[in-house]
Amino acid sequence: MYQNYLITGATGFLGSAVVQLLLAHGCRVLALVKNSDPLIYTLPNHVAVFYGDLTDKESLRDFFAAGGDDFCVLHCAGLISIASKPDEAIYRVNVQGTQNIVDLSREFGASRLIYVSSVHAIPEKPAPETITEPDRFVPDEILGDYGKSKAMATALVLEAAQSGLNASVVLPSGILGPGDLARGNMTRMLLAFCRGRLPLGVKGGYDFVDVRDVAAGVLACTERGKAGECYILSGHYASIQDLLALTASLLGRKVPRLCAPAALASCAAPIFEKIGQLRGERPFFTPYSIAVLRSNGIFSNRKASRDLGFHARPLKETLRSMILWFQEQKLIPPAR
Image 1 (spheres, rainbow, N blue to C red):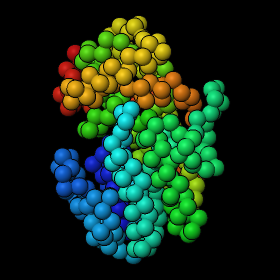
Image 2 (tube, one colour; image 1 turned 60 degrees about the vertical axis):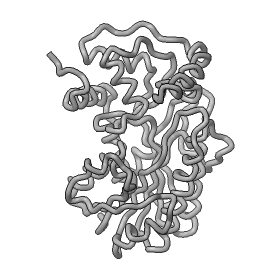
Image 3 (cartoon, rainbow, N blue to C red; image 1 turned 60 degrees about the horizontal axis):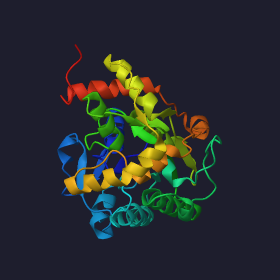
Image 4 (cartoon, helix red, strand yellow; image 1 turned 120 degrees about the vertical axis):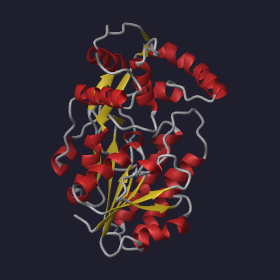
């Protein structure tokens, strides 16, 4: 273990789970947040809070200086977008922000750096071939600006590792589970389904993993991960139809049968995205998200299992925990 743990994205879905796990292990946690972060109030009282902006290197110096002589940096922060044309901020935060973290980790002598990337940074292989950790990350081989930005950032971290920085990368798949206060896309979709406001699903699927297992994988990587190596933290492949059917069974409801063909959803997605923009709402499905659901979502976590002791719990357990959390947050009625 390290004397101090510096974490970015501490109020995010994954970051908050990592913070809770660190505190459970008795670790000293320093969290970087933006002044405008509406979820600052969720941080436990004994977490040391530092204010800064990933894109402004000078604003991060106090945060790194507080690390002392023995500290581990957990870079969980990043922008996620399923929009067809994301704002350029996705590159400023995900790429330049990561470069700033790398530069300051070197300057202040970080003992360890773990970067949370994404499986979206990995080039797709034709189905049914299983996707494993690649030898290199090339943005031009990646679909969508989000994946491209994560590939660029991953390459930066691995280049730094080759130059002596004790850094590793974890690549989670689609993260699900309790505690998503920011309500990411899949959380919003499942919440809408639980409320009876999702009339039909979409054919296609992806790999989903529990946020608590990813948090455990991040911590395991700090101790057991090898410098310059990447680790896929994937869970289980499930179609959207299977995901909704599992949720329905846990709620004691009839299994939904309506599921739009992916080709039809692809045609309709630009319209739904435009309507969402006009209403100031985030749509569940966009051309990019439909393309992801139609892509090869079969990933192997064998390397993480072997080297880190990573384990992914059953998807049904994750969904059960999500439903209980929805109920605790009074987002859906309690079970009868």
